[in-house]
Amino acid sequence: METKRTSGIPFIVSAPSGAGKTTLCRMAVDRFPAMKHSVSYTTRKPRDGETNGVDYWFVDNAAFDTLVKGREFLEHAGVHEKRYGTRRKDLLSLLDSSIDVILDIDVQGAKNVRKRLKGGVYIFILPPSLQACEERLRSRGKDTPDEIRKRLEIALREIKRASEYDYIIINEDLEDAFDKLRSIIISEKIRKTRLIKKVKGLFKV
Image (cartoon, rainbow, N blue to C red; front, side, top):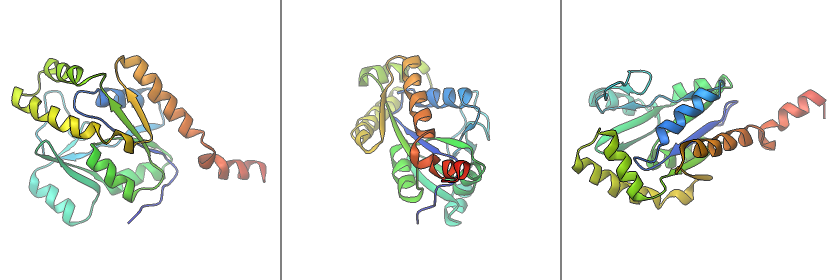
């Protein structure tokens, strides 16, 4: 069932592992005061430096199952043998408060959000090459060689779905990529269809 879009704008950002999606999303939240990051639920363990309730809500499989059975998730999916989900009431609470929200989710999650949430803006982040993606994964030192291989296999499948998105950004230079993301956010905030009701109210037209 589709959920009607409210005042805030949901920006849905997807990318293969190593494309720089998380960094770009954090930059957007830092530089747009009226934007917040949607905190997903996950069954994976926290990595060094991650904080519960800030990076993710870290839960076990039993708690995740309870949320699924209660239809609490707007979307949920399995990614890299772990589970991730966006809790509906958390997201809608922000949107209802006229807060723009950036959702850092995979292509499965984005497809489900598109079915259930009206008015989203869909952005796909690409690395300049698959080799660059591999180098970034190795340099961050968080994955084993086997995990990196699996992530690259999944990355190829995800890249094939980039055409489903409204915008595509190639992240070769971080600041240049963010400048494009910033331009998309600003353009969407002044889109006619989002402002027409406000204009009519202000000018009584």
